[in-house]
Image (cartoon, rainbow, N blue to C red):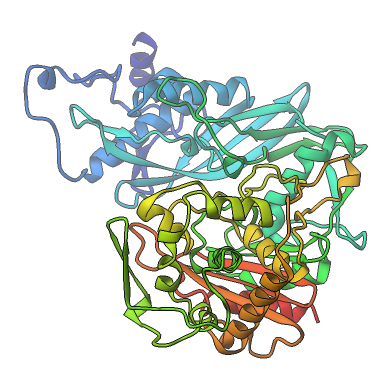
Length: 566
């Protein structure tokens, strides 16, 4: 406490109010120590004696003074290098001190200047300026961050609500900032024609390019440079050990600042530059839209784009696919002689199974209709009505054996999610038939489903040719019988021409087929809109989260990309 008190006593001028936060210059740089340590305040972060004695816990909205003084206390301590004091100004001192200590020790950031902005309620933005130095090489660092003030559980005292992204917006639970030799040498990613792919030209490829570097940097012929990067880690579980994760949770390390350049190697991808540009255009301004285009006969991925650039939902999304899953379910029902394209098939308003009552969109029904009509209009009860005649693992086996889904064996070249169709029973099993329940897919998975129908055989999608690194691509154990395949193609073609996909697919020529989907999500006002389709040897799928009906949201994106292919 002596050094803190001395710092306060040396201050001879009144602090200036900057952006609504009290600040004072110390040593000629940035904001400095704020006099919170004296006058009876709990400078060590412990609970005030009055609370311990049984006084009322503080509650209610935070005052402007509580927000500004708490933020100032945290920022002043952090800037001065007193990580313990800064951590005590948060609601999770242990986690905060570990992250802040690593900021100086591992990230090697010095001469830190923190400048607060104008508070917005309980949120305080601030700018960070510093210098990163490693083995004689230095470079300035600058970025924007923000913190939020909360009431601490137990006594209601105002504290900084601790989150790793307070230190840097790229950080998530378990991540670290590290400066040193790059984890992998840089790579120059090339499109299928040999042109360079960059995040500047193709903004949504940022995560893909990072993943390519992590995967192929050491074998592409380059040498590592020096950089400040986010090293991804798994958040701890309840037992303190890293929590389990799936391929959908994986994210590549991210470069924050390059101190010196390495020598890049090269890795060629299957992306088509014109189609990638078209995909970028279609998702631009749509933060929750993702789309994938692939070649049905080979599995080559020709374009991938995400409107929100922070996560590769197109490859790694794990979302209920809604009625696009009916393509897989329809193949199952036809194979088991539980449905046939031109035969009468019941589509009532409701169907109950396993204690759940299922219904169609807006409670429609089709009287005396065929299975093709139910598929084209996306009748839920037509599919769920066959649940009593199915085994719990029938859909799981169909997805794995015919469509190559849910086996965790895809080798795309970068992290991807292979879909999940778990074995379920009773009502959840019935829900899985219409792409709800426990079924989870990415746009890449659903593009592959359309490609399998079009080509007749599952071809695992890939972004980098397996010959580059000797990968073995996944295969399916069997194909659909010719009669089943013919019916699927006819039903998808009918849906594209006369069903729920007709409006989106208008003007898309060639041999076409499509299926729409809308997936309800808990605590979400609008469903996720899905669309999968093929045109000649191309297959595509997209999702717009919280978009509504797939034919109206994801459909135009997918159709535009198919048109762009010529």
